[in-house]
Length: 305
Image (cartoon, rainbow, N blue to C red; front, side, top):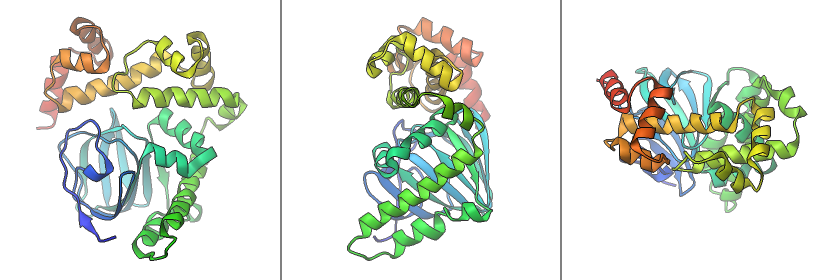
């Protein structure tokens, strides 16, 4: 496929692969997959919430940014991995930064990883992102620039699509292998019921995919065809946190995104996320962010000037 540059709008809730908000030379691009090898320009003034899983490998220099409200530093020889709908903001990059990126839709990721998709979801839906060191010999086997990207660029085989999917599967399985090696919760998860693991992952996926996230635990339980009590038991045993805590974590991330990056009123944001009224929304923001919605918006925007 011919290399091209993508230009797109910023400050949108769901950025599709074909609407990437920075200029990069793309090797491959369709509705569910984007591959690029010269990621040298990143947005530096806005927040971005993208609707696909992202794997960024830093080949040179350094990039710093926030994922949700957590600071991340990505250095040469490291790979950043995050699931869909994660908010990235406050990006700063060194002049010599260079990296590669693969963006994959949730549907394609499940198709590629198959039975191992649970490992990917378990790590990323609980941590939101992961940094993998790729300097050692084992990690270099999953170097996206040396394997997948080179194959995307050069392959002219009539079986190109099947070959590329196989290569992606190999690369992502190696990343999952690294997840397991780095995980401090491996023994705990191994001891839990596989059914509980699956239901917990589905619960977090259901929160993540919703725009209106602020709904009752009972509604999320109904989606899984289980009782709210059993959902609470699952969350406690698998993660040590309650369903309400998980819902709140995702709700607060969305509130922060809308207040920082849109001009929606408090009522509009409350309606969009699922609050009953503006008063309840304002109280919730003060409890979780420490200030009123207006104060939080003012503070965050002044911080970016």
